[in-house]
Image (cartoon, rainbow, N blue to C red):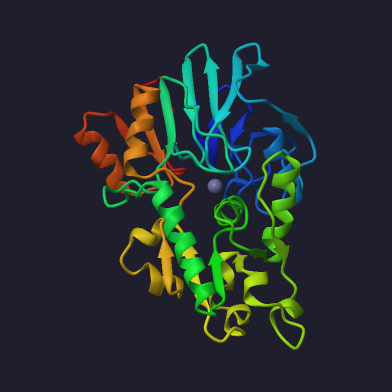
Length: 334
Ligand SMILES: [Zn+2]
């Protein structure tokens, strides 16, 4: 039912799942670049309308069949496709494939926790689960999401009061919009880096309000016409700016990285920031286990994660293997 030939393909069909190479037919789970072809477009893609729009903006995705959540689509007489919310970024989907041999749920990236800018995940049962497992170690247990929001708002408000420029970093699609919404919900002023600003516009057009914010202009921050700190507020920017001239132009900025890896003790140093807070768009260890419980599969294939995660699952009597693209796997033949 499932084959790895460089990428993941549904056996007996030409249908690839999140292929990194251009394919004649591919389902795209969400619009992050590590789930899209490298510098190319697919012949024909299946995706949610939001993913189609975001991917179109990022790499171009010409022919797309837009699928709504929880609506069956007959791909061919033997294959039904169904997308359900993955809770990761706007438009992100889990892909359920139903074939005569059985059913398969492929997660792409996901989280089960709620968030302010993305519909919460809604995994459906399947015989085989192919799951993302980025944070598949017991040390990765995120604190309550409201607590992380409060810590961010407190840090930003404190910096503004102390006359320091807060620079809050998170990847520009998904994380940055969540950060903006957290800050504006707390009544804090926000300015967005251009890369973030462009994606904010797509979020808003697709019906996700982000509150009031400015677009970054150098003259608002530096030089004789610079605005007051209280007016320009927190600067929300992609992670790449952490070690760049963009940050070093400020005298004494408070740099904050929002990432699940903040749970690692050396995160601050690794990212070169003063503060790292565990805001993630991925499932933590407990959510990975919860997903398996809810999907109730006979077999689990874990991708994008630690080898130890599979060991943890086997300890819990779950039939699991690490999905490696170089291994030719054929399910339902075992
Ligand atoms: Zn992603």
